[in-house]
Image (cartoon, rainbow, N blue to C red; front, top):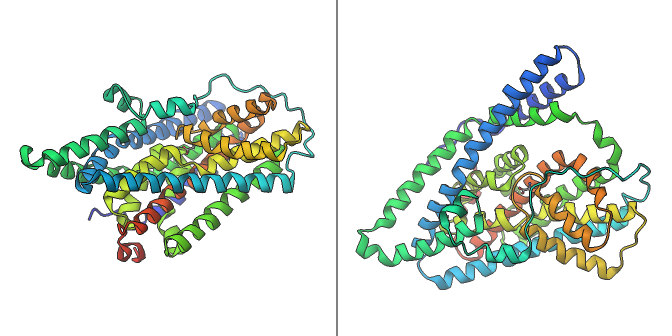
Length: 420
Ligand code: ASP
């Protein structure tokens, strides 16, 4: 087994706190001339953060490809694959439905938008990442050009191609002199690469957090405190409670053991705000620390990173209620049900990259004729909230991976329950 760098979680936390402290110091004081602040912002925080993100993203496509091909080619029958797909997608949709319902319930109970006084006409920034409709998400699963799909990080298309490639590899092993063994070996090399890149995480996290704090400071949060506090509480509740229930009652697994082993993954997601960029770390943890069989992990994790976004759905549900309350619009029960369905659908179509969830939020707002300018308020406080909801998104992916594996007899409980 490949070893993880020592004290990684502690060092990442130190990097995170130092990033906050140094970023805030430079933002709030005039201790250094502004030219020094600008230099640190660009050539330390931004450059360091961008390099770290690039290195993580560099691994995603080859890692998903090699691990899935290896997994599928040893899984063998396409019947067990069908069952696995059905179960995985079913659990993902169910947890997302629960997530958005929680947000709507809490939003209508606590009314975070009812006392909002300032002007909502804040312009939405012009350059926003694109969301995808359901039609293009489904057609996009079947790529016409795999090189293009890989270059554009189209995860579901890569998953589909890897599956058919893995099945063909399995069927031709007797003709190719067991070519699948070579894929398994390449997969091991990529796992080692993750560990090498993870050892730079404390530095990378320092830069990513510093870049964020030095640019905007943290003042903006006071304006929409009720929304921010309620959203964070809901995200933490869903991560701690809903997944615990699933793990305990459906998986028969100890939730505390699960959370203890998920620290690094959550911190990576927090620092990168991208479930996709976190895939290498999620895959590694789910397989090596939580004991999910590689065949299952290599399918469930990348699919989850792409379609399962409970944190995003919670934000979208709460933001919709918040904006409706702010604008004095009462949503009917039928509209609440529509929000649930829409948020589940849009979170599938949301790209697993920073801030993507606020874009697909537009689809929901449009549906109910809510003022689109209000997205400006949501975006103003979105950076930190995006970090937290991305951690929830990946925690959900890993929890479902454990549950699917357990119910398919593909979970090594000795590894799951082990101390390390
Ligand atoms: N940043 C989120 C993710 O990658 C998506 C979003 O909600 O903006 O999981």
